[in-house]
Image 1: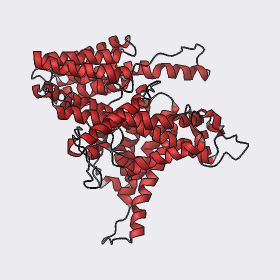
Image 2: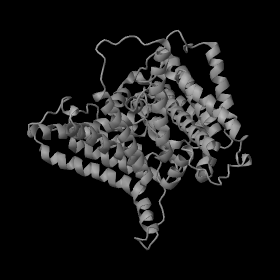
Image 3: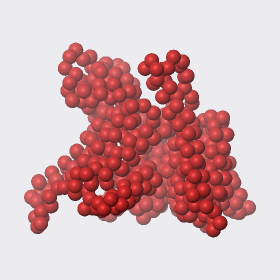
Length: 521
């Protein structure tokens, strides 16, 4: 079921909220939790009910395993370690079967290494998200960090429908205590108002902005070899804006729906295109994935490298990063490993591997720049124009690097990505045939370029919705507020009218609802 559909907005969401609070009032929190579990399973099964069995089996397996991983005075630490490794392997094998096995077999078939064509398999929605969520839970059980272990709360932790399909990736200590708190189930009008406002903003990003620029990006990436310089850049920027407002919109809607049920979800998107470095970008884009990979991949690898260096009598702190070998082992190795696996997490195929490697290189260069650049002893305030330039160029350079990476992310193949980048570099100097304006479902190159420019101005110049929400923001993480420069949301008639107008404007475009881009992961 899609958030941007009439059946969700007009039927599923209001009925689920009403049943949730009515049951909580009449029968208590447990009844409300059961209702929300059933609603979440219904939401997931709406697309393909056959995968409900897979989701249920995954949850049952991981919860049963977590019970055996619970620390015990008589348990053997090594045995529980092997049990954890087996559980992680089982989860990854499930993910590999559905997400990577058949693309790999297809690659071997087309390359001539396999005669048989094994076809493909339907990818269950959200399998990467609910698999990673549960792996994190198992690791924390092994380390004795889990305090809330109720079965129904665990079920909600995994299946809570706002995050189930495309994130954010949740951590048990943030969510399960909220489900265990009876105060969560008391109806609060302010929560409903704030949640509906955030949902309306997110829905508008998806329906009115992302979906409006999507046709131009689709046409361009379908014909990458036909794009001259200007059109190649127009298409690349169009996709950049489509991905930004699509994913940002979904994240906003997820958090908005969450707070309607009294649940605060973690912030997942914080104006990433305003980042002044790639390091800063990955702390703003898909923030819960970055946090997950840092905790479960980067930090353990870095700790292992540090211990190995200490055993050999080598420095392992900041001093180690000042030498080439130290920087290679302490920064490059864990960064490249983590980011390569991040690329593979997004999908099967060489282009996703290259996407991860490219972002790993970006991060290593950024870390090297921070470590090696000379800092003036007595910094002097620069002239105004130089100050503006010093603020502009890091953001612009970071954004251009991100756009180049997104070409690999979006292109149908590595060859198409190279062709698109060639067009953006002005290398299509031969008899290139520009795309016909009649191929576009809108008004062609000029108007799509103007639309893209308008979206750029919004992404770079406007505050994000959490800054607009101010102290009423329902995210677990607070953003830096820009008090006084922009209007702040509050429960008032003008804001209510704006929300209603946005919802009606979006509903007018529900004839052919488009799926969210991150649904395929």
